[in-house]
View 1 (cartoon, one colour):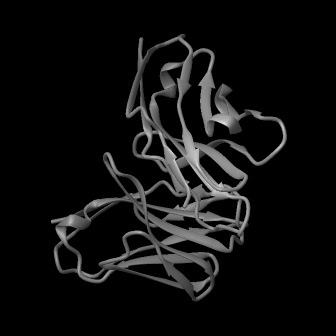
View 2 (cartoon, each protein chain N blue to C red):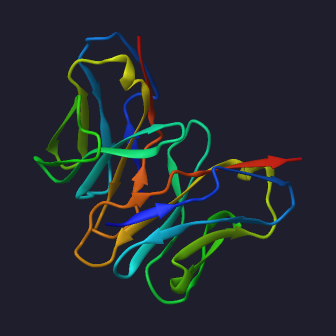
Length: 115
Length: 112
């Protein structure tokens, strides 16, 4: 069974500081990986996705993530955080074999940005 | 751009009422999903559908049913609403088995 762990429930950073949100997954085959962001009162918006190829993936809003198979990780990074990045972030894994229709989500990390 | 539209942003109902939450997507996606989101619990899958008139139970289907009569529309039904169904409900759709999901803005449902 696939699973996703986001170890940090809350992360607090200062505006302009760098950011790394952690995501660890468990999956028996090649995973498809996603990061979503949810602003207060909104649905989830896709930030980036990894299917194959280059392990460093660029997304929207200046975010990037790196797939590390040896560590079963897909951490999200941003070099300089803006106050508007304050939101909930979700990592998700989907199956690459067997045609899994259902991605599995982590419980989310809430990002707080101090001015 | 894909648009997933949920009929209501906020809804207040009474216990025992039958409640309908509607979701429409405009990109001919085969797969549609209903989640509920509660603080500390993340997204929990209630039901999903991979084709018209096809449905599968998710992790927490008790107290809910769904309907998919047309490809673009996926309805969530609370047969007899209870206070523990007060939550944020999110609808999503996606094209293929491993494509990302597209989400609606959510319906915040309060059962009094």
